[in-house]
Image (cartoon, rainbow, N blue to C red; front, side, top):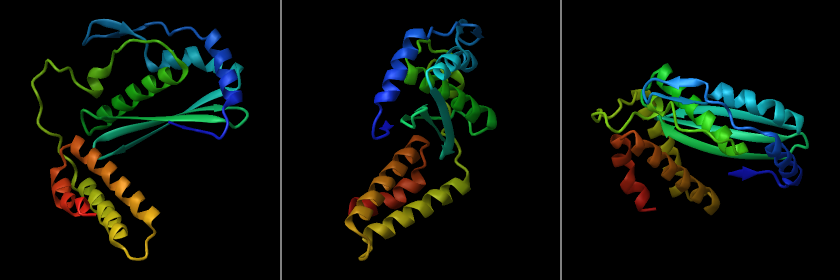
Length: 203
């Protein structure tokens, strides 16, 4: 989580908003789990007027890399103060539907967590399939993503062994490389991990 230098006005506004906020109604039906749930639009419809009344707004920015969907959620106050959080999860499929489903799922949970809305698990089967199904083969990672990951790791390694790079830059490069390794492991991108792991472990 990241925050602005001060959040006193934002905190006061959020406290006032929480007094007025009501939990979203479960108006959508999940045929997979045979249950009702509050979808993203219901969460937005319930929260937006109350947040706006108290000078608050929500901004959400999704991204996708190496089979992992990430959503950054910012709660912004009219004073300019803000809070930002980030959440990630693997997409079940590298298709528009699979990625879109994961984005929707993460947006809803990020929004609910940021402003303390209560809701139940629901459409997660599209983002992460139920464990009672037979395990699927590892997702096929497009060659373009493999090449991109390799280029990034080449750059990080070059910085780490550079004689002119500062210690701060070298530490930053190693941290970024480690984060890329973790993302690669989630999609079993072993061909990238195996190639570079021994190099980075020596530095």
